[in-house]
Image (cartoon, rainbow, N blue to C red; front, top):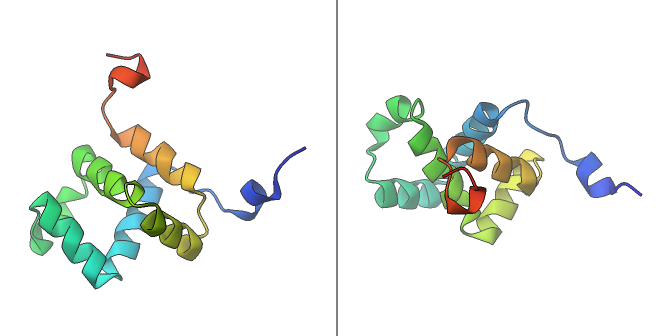
Length: 102
């Protein structure tokens, strides 16, 4: 039996679209965006160039996923499933020991 939960959530076409959606959401959450920038050391003026760096996108997605209430707030607003965000994070993150691709 297939879950209606997955069917009710729209999936992003690709990881880049998911990352852009997360960035847009963060930009509309000034306190959260400020905290993210402070943790990364990226200045607001540098964000436009940083979005072309997979490491920046991986860090941004990790930031979102490391706090479940924030992740769920994004998912509620965007209509994306948490699994979509997790898949995008995996796409932009380098292989780790747990991936078996080291």
